[in-house]
Image: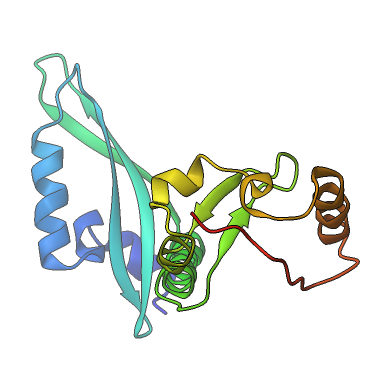
Length: 171
């Protein structure tokens, strides 16, 4: 870490990698008295670790329209970026588990018992296209009565049971 008096003597663009400094300088050159601010994100390295920052730069102009000063306001968005990356990784993993798994899987809305998603194995097993399955409800393929299905749905919703075996109708 550099002492505050050293940091204060550095120019704003000195804090960024050359490619980012060039990009920021280009954005500053495009600012005008009618378009005084620009928002952007930059990636930096602090102690060997990646950090992301969200910034807003505001230009101040003299009466002739020439920039006299820039003010930059920013904050570290590293935590949010890392959470977003982890979320994306987990979504990709969940998608792979659902869509590439050989087990038949249906996602059922517990309130309406409509099929809201089905994996390719379900389409193959039931003989319906994905779109056809999405237009069905569990009532259309389960051999239990509507009343029995509602009871089982409630049991699932309130976590009284965690697995079920049903006889289903195929196309």
